Amino acid sequence: MAAFGGTPPAGGEEEPDGVRSALSGLTTRGRSFLAAGIAAAVCAYVLGQQDLLRVGLLLAVLPLACVGVLYRTRHRVAGTRWLGPARVPVGSEARVHLRIDNVSRLPTGLLMLQDRVPYVLGPRPRFVLDRIEPSGRREVSYRVRAELRGHYPLGPLQLRLSDPFGMCELTRGFSTRDTLTVVPRVEPLPPVRLAGEAAGYGDGRSRSLALAGEDDVIPRGYRHGDDLRRVHWRSTARYGELMVRREEQPQRAHCTVLLDTRATAHRGAGPDSGFEWAVSAAASAAIHLLERGYAVRLLTDTGGTVPGGDPASGSAGPALETADTAGMLLDALAVVGHSQGTGLAPAYDVLRTGGAGLLVAFFGELDEEQAALAARMRRRSGAAVAFVLDHPAWSQGGPAGAGQRTEERLRVLREAGWTALAVGPGVPLAHLWRQAGAGGSRPDNGPAAAAARTGVWS
Image (tube, rainbow, N blue to C red):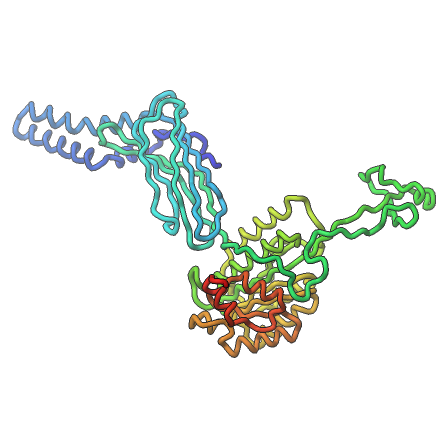
């Protein structure tokens, strides 16, 4: 929920150019009345007709009086917007709720409400609100839908005040904006064990640095703030200083999800492009592994990581860590775009200094040099799974594995110990994930893959 500038006066505060802006709010009807009044007054002066002069003055004064009344009216209204939800996947709808409160002692007139939204979310919503009584409120809502990832600003909210005769309209806006985050679509994945994965498979497990027994305990020196109930008195008597027992420290298996964002490695654009598939697949894999107990970080070819910090610590955080990390990963993937880099060296440097654990990579097109570099990333990883976009298949709409060049790159990765799979258009990630759990020695273009592409299983 966000408040739009507190409770700004919808009638507007008087400014040096306030009268000029009020006169610019004359409607077509108001301008017509003013022009007719001036013309009638001029004709009355030329012809010497007093009655026509009275009519001209009436026509000219009426719109000016409406401007003055509307400009001097001190209505105070407050606007509130909230999103439900504020983070939605691609192709899903979000509902935006607006509430207008009249916080003044006077009733408002007819209000026209308009909210600014990016054109990719649809047309600008407009509402007409009837008279709002003092301390009253009106609530309206509209829906937005986006087919592309990103952050979309909503607002500012604008109100149009109109007089009963329709002679003048004044626009007053609020300053606060909200942001709708459209994240990649997350596909549920089957709970398979990936080839080469270490025992324990992501379960949050504990590693005891020292047992709490009396004989085999490994104590450490007392530090300010330690609980006195952890004092180990036998060791204290032995060493002549306060010693405390070490506690069990929880350890989590960790995983790195590598996303290749190089512009030179991807072709095409739009929701059905291979790059968008890779972004959605990276989000699906990261969320799936988080739910299974992994400490997950996202790594791109530029060397940037989300979340930051030491990826190899493996320590378990508070209970909210998984939800917070998932939100951070999805927010980062919502705005990720093509990088201008030409190689995977920055990502390799990051993995070389802290790359132990499971590695899941989503590569674009690999040349011979980058394939060799990607193969060396496997050295410190307990298990490594690579999904390589088969660009000939994406370009021609054919099955995965159609390009001989892609097969050569897969062979290089497999010889280095990767579980490497070619990715063609239309194949669900869940099918590829299940195939990776079975070993994934070669791309599957048989009946199972065809059924996965069409969504029909026997």
